Length: 354
Image (cartoon, rainbow, N blue to C red; front, side, top):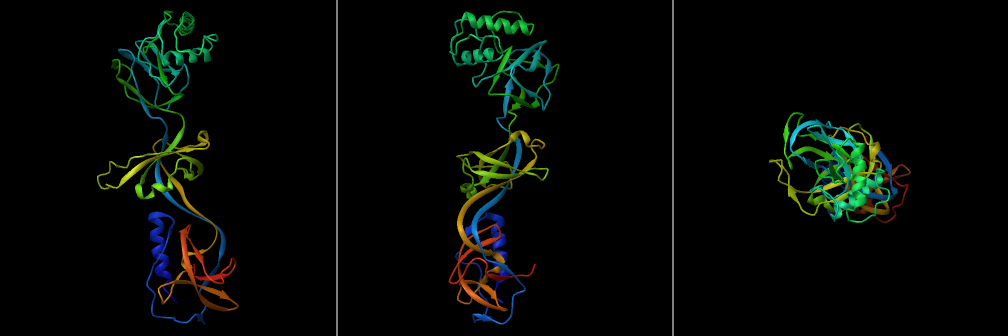
């Protein structure tokens, strides 16, 4: 018998550390069995298979939510109410209150950094008007960047609805902008605390579930934006996802015992609303690398190291076993791509007993 066990062990170690790869040499042959025809049969056999072989690697990540950001106070005073951790807040929903006056959520990418009033212009005015239209307070407002008397009237209607002074102008003490619905990850102040403009009040995220990875630079080629992946969730179920972003700069992590440069990778889910799991819990992402189409492959345990330094398999047929030299291709999924004279799908090759 050739050095089948040695080859299988080397391949197993390599698979743990990197997924699929091509091989030029694995183990040194032993001094036995120089002939091609063998009288002894292997303990078990497996068929040569023809099909696609896909390299992959599994990377541990962290299940969380996208777009983590801080929300700062827009007014000074005593905090009298704040949304609790885990709360989901949609447009016009309450975020927090200072001295009994609510600050509500509006959608937009521009921050709420000033008091908006008649005659003002800017992208923040455009997104305010879009919110007023959506909420039903300004159906006739133009989609432009000018705060008009009609905008002031719409603001007054919104203020009346919420029991506010109908001033026709609105500032950070009444609304805060975010890109969409938010989830409160943590409240960073408590009722009764004093706040000041610009002071952090809470940390928010979007409601979309994601997995964050720190990928070794050596594995970076496996993570391509738009690539499909499978994610094993904390409850043991799996979900399909997509690589949404890949960092362009490698950085060393916070672990003092691991100085390996890594890049940040974010995976989004195809059906985010169906993903369950505690925030910051572990999840495993299976990244797919190279695909070899329509190739012959055998279990890695079928490989033999031959006397001349090459590799082979034992083809078993009609009660006899013979060695056939093979050329090796990619290793993946516990199998190895092979090619050689007389090989075809369905032939059985010797493998170690299971």
